[in-house]
Structure formats: C-alpha cells, structure tokens
Length: 245
Ligand code: UDP
View 1 (cartoon, helix red, strand yellow):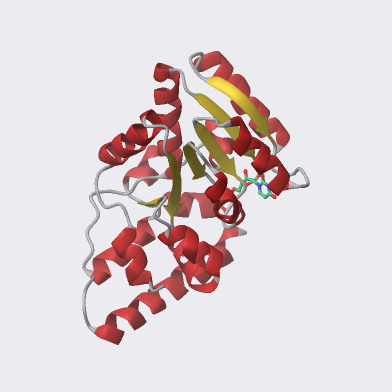
View 2 (cartoon, protein in one colour):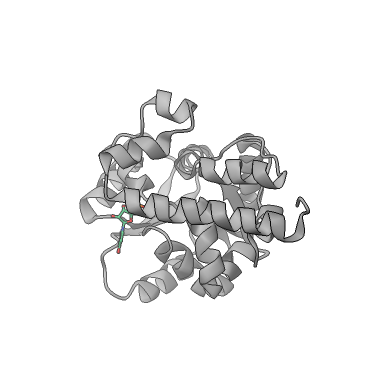
C-alpha cells in the first residue's frame, strides 16, 4: 500500500473521541487491534506484507502516535486533531478498566518491569482483574499468545517493541473473539513507574522523541533512518500523482 492509503485509514479525531470508540468496542465485546503508528511503522508497512495487512485490516484502529505522522499528514493535506500517544491510551484504558471492572493481560518487557506494573495495578487499580502476565523474553511467544487469546481478556497490552508486537497480534488476530489488543512498545517501562516519561515541556512541544534519543542515543540511527526515508517517500508519493489524499 502507499503511505497515502495509510493516511486515509488513520483515525483523525481527538484523543477523547478515540477513547470513546475503544470503550464502545469493549462494551460490545468486539475485537479491536489498536496500532499506535509512527513513521517507522508506516515505512515497515511498505516493506513487510504482514505489517501492511495489519495497518489496513478492518479490525485495526490506526492511531497517530508520532509527531512525524502529523507533520507528514500536513504535507499530504491531511489534518489530525491531535497526536494520540500510545502510553496515554494505556493510562486511560487502565483507568476505564478499573471503573468498569475489566480484565487485562500484560505481555512483554523485562520480568521485573512487567511484575512492577502488575503490582502497581493491584495496588492502584483494584477494580482490574489481571488475567495473567508474561515477560517478553520467553520462548514460544506464539504459544503464549494463543493461550492469551483463549483466556479472552478484555484488554491485552503487548510490549515487545515494533514490529514484533504488531506482527504477533496480526498473525493471531483472526482467532480473537473479543478484546482490545494494543502494541505498546516501551510503555510498560513508564507505566510501571520504573522509567520516567519525558518532562511535560518535551511532550507539550512535540519533542518527546528528542528526549528519548538523548536518554537512549542508540535510537538515533533508527530514528533518522525511518524518518528521513519517510520524508522522501512522502515527497515521492505527493509528486507522483500530484493529488492530496
Ligand atoms: N522487549 C521484549 N522482548 C523482546 C524485545 C523487546 O519484551 O524480545 C521489550 C523491551 O523490554 C521494551 C519494549 O519491548 O520494554 C520495547 O520498547 P521500545 O521503546 O524499544 O519500543 P518501540 O520503540 O520499538 O515501540
């Protein structure tokens, strides 16, 4: 698919209305695959057929996480109401699950991280039933995932990093009866309280990516690779047909 097709598919409204859609799916016991996309994921969609399928699936709610996605949209004439960071969806989902007594399964991150998050949920979100959890370094992730689907949790957060988490969900989503499945990258590290999110200044000015790079310089290559290629791709597509989306 072209990047333009992904832009057609993106959810473009506010974070609040996006959460309303997710909550309605939860209440209707429908299955939903939430992808919080940045330029890197979109570029993978062009390269990996399975990622492309995941991005375009009718079961997928495609959400603009990175500021690069919003800026890229502006180049194509696509407007977004706001950026919707995956970690904020997770926080809101946990609060909602607490209020409405929903069940959650947590899959991913290092063992001490996922355990710290489970402890926090048991302490601070007493309405949530933790159906189970597993760290992200176990062998046989497909088997673990099949078991998770069988448990039918209301919410499944998968923190294995991109593209592993999206490809795993995509491989098995046809077997899902109900539940919100969301790939959350490094969010467990933050939600557990073990790692700080960027200070609010960085979040407000849409430069959270810059903060993450200064904390983890190994991200620089990955960031530049995907974002620069993304800009070239956008330019190519834009001038290819000359039409906005
Ligand atoms: N991770 C994991 N298993 C793996 C590789 C990574 O559980 O085999 C976890 C890792 O511990 C971290 C998260 O996946 O918590 C990846 O975080 P990152 O911020 O790199 O996510 P991305 O930027 O790729 O979305």
